[in-house]
Amino acid sequence: MKTVIFPIIVITSLISFSCDQEEKNLSLEEFCSIAPDEWECDLIRNDFNPEDIPQGTEDPIAIIKYINSSREFIRYENTALNPSLVLDLYPIDQKSELIDFIKSQQLYSWCIPTYYGETEDYFIITSPCFINNGTFTEEADSLIQDLHSALEKIMIRNDYHF
Image (tube, rainbow, N blue to C red):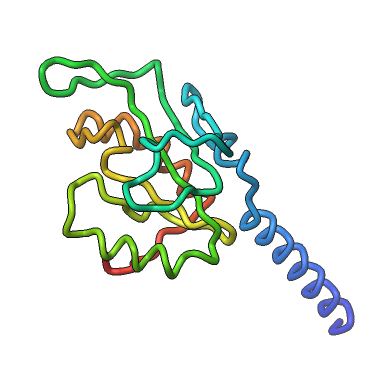
């Protein structure tokens, strides 16, 4: 009986490890494929618009822009906006420098770089200005929640005491 159980445990462990590795080694395209229905995703790998990069940070390896044109919320002065999110992806090996930089920027304007999450390969930052165009009303937050939930399935968020 023991000789049958041991191979089963080894095979199960290998399959589990293989699945974990597949989930962790994300391609950039998977950030778009995970987006819920009605969310448009634009993956930008070069020719970055400086307005999509938080002030003071270097160029990322990619920028991912999400927008949901089928939803709207009202911003001050009756301006209708669509829910949106801009993420800047950096190689995970720059994590330590980016954490230090984010901490150093906390005293400045509200369009500072902020930590969004990470994968095995990418360190992801955004800015309050890049989430729903800087609108943090209950209505705006509720319209983007499904995107945040979908992204949480492919990344983790650590507490770096920002």
